[in-house]
Image 1 (cartoon, rainbow, N blue to C red):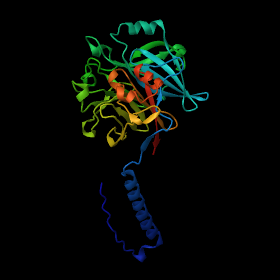
Image 2: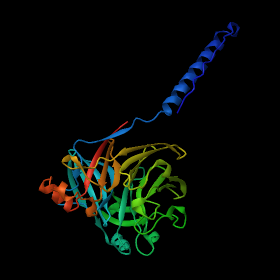
Image 3: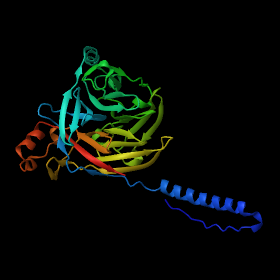
Image 4: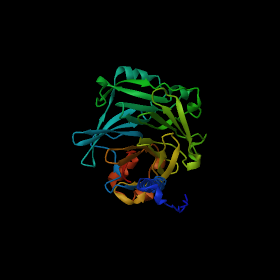
Length: 357
């Protein structure tokens, strides 16, 4: 963006009096301030992220290891630990506590009969994104479509916890969010393709379809749908083609900035949204997919989830669902026995990035 500065010559008639002179000075000063404000507002953001030196780490404790992790959301702080919810796309939800920066502990949530019965009709309990609405104190789950009619099952579901307490380890019910499945929001939903990224703020749901291509691996673009949180009315569709975002595999919204994961391009990105939901700015960052404990070795990670805590730290998790995401034998020979075992048992890896802005 280029700026053109114009010099203004002001001639002061002394007959105007001091009052008018001060008014002219005040107006000139205001113009200068407005110009400076415009310049700062239009400048490119200096936001950056860096991989925390204590990460990545294996996502497990002594008893529990999540599997095929597709979603994570930050709930807040409980005692001296940070509290998160994690969704696995094999139909499990865990509560994760992180204490002393790097100590993990898990509690696997129980589905009570009503919730269990509801899910029994699904071809697959294909959980993808889990996200917390801090404004309403609610948690939502994105479930992908499968079976003969994927649109029937694909959707966003509110999780009702036991005793209506989000800290309960029991899930009492799953309530579908009423979204028009005959409209444009669902036109690209199909077998195993749904809203892989989802987020919510004070006014809107943000749903990112994994891809709009018939072939996920060759996807070059997708779409993000912004819905009114109260009515589920579609307010905005954002095509990612012009921003070079190929897939949406995780979303998180904070202060008008929509963060996301593009798994195909191995990028973290954000869209800076205006009050009219227009995209003011886009910035992308490379994913630093190093092996835990071996920063010199990188591997192909299927990153699928993102959340940000109250310390401006971003957590992302991979979904090691296939042998394609395990390093080859030559690399494995250079690793210790525990690391090799973690890869072969498809233990997820969690990364933490520090956001600087």
